[in-house]
Length: 231
Figure (cartoon, rainbow, N blue to C red):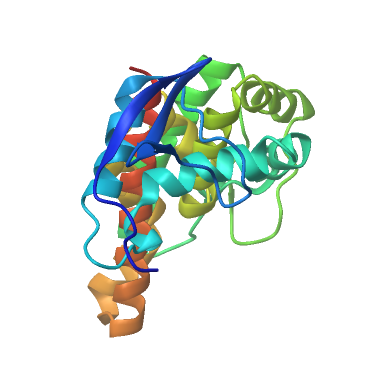
């Protein structure tokens, strides 16, 4: 849509902060008030609005998109989102290892096993590792512990975790990103480990490269959103 405002600013609002465009409060696509938990996130989203050119491009506003999603979707469908995110614990990427070649097996062990060890200590949630693609049943107590960690998040943190989990294909990687165990680059590399290995061996086509780049940007934006929530 064509830009219809001159300036954007973060403003105080009851219960948090909001964004005003030429003094008018921004609402979500669902027409809900855009209420943000702190000024740091509000200022960052205001910057996204200010940086728009003659045409407003929502795809260049990932922080705004995450905040709006948290209000419009996660707030209204909280239990369903929790179930979706926690469900990744049943078939988490980092639990499924290759049988070969040896170089890939070693790389998976070096990158993924420390994350599983961390999750065991952090959430008391040991997960079983298997080779191949046949589903591995996980301990119910571990699945329950990870679900409790997800369910304990507030609405915006839950939206961020959902975005990271779906982008990474792993709840464990997403939780490590949320808690600062991994940065955005490490989370992307961990989630793309198998694909990167295949590219090193066989090369990469333009479509796959574009998909990987989009995932990288999504993870970077989500990591920034998570960091701003902590301020």
